[in-house]
Length: 267
Image 1 (tube, rainbow, N blue to C red):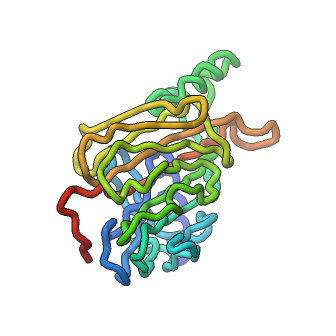
Image 2: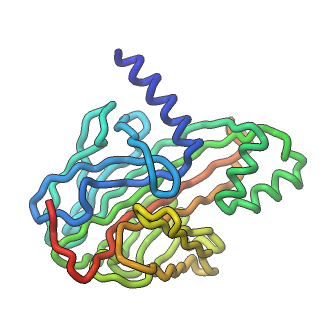
């Protein structure tokens, strides 16, 4: 049974590569202090996703940072939700997740379509320049997801990187009040220029905002309304000469609830 579960998880990881978007979806973004919440992983498109069960073999890191301290998010393999944690609630908490690399191959046409869908036109051009447009897309992808859990007070911690290889970092705590989203895109801790960044509103797939980071990695997204938001970006690089893949891709996401004027804590 354990072998079957691992095999099923491997198939699921392949499905994740095809669906692409990956994010953290807690049972609530606005818990009462001291509440235990579940932490689910989701994969899909347009902020509509399927559950991804916890599988330790694919987890490089899964933790929560609150009140200046960091600890692992606990859970059991092969089940959804992927974890549980008690929220202290004094200030906004940051949940972060990093995956190990997973290999995928796509037919040339499907690979090129997905590159264009995610704004990776420079990769399309690079493949064409090298005469690779008709070759399989051989890729190793890495997932880096964060979620902000609202506390009684804003947290300066949310404006600091947690150390993911690819990361979207807010300039201010977006859970404290409704406002435009301002932040930075970092790759290996350094600002990344010209990264496509997209914002999606939960429950309203027609709401779709996009921007590119400037030369300092800075982004600004004028969110039109309160709600649960997914901010996402993809960065792709040619793999090293000795790698089994041709490309390494890094997928960053940030989920949070931007409050309305009458927001109150809920279980």
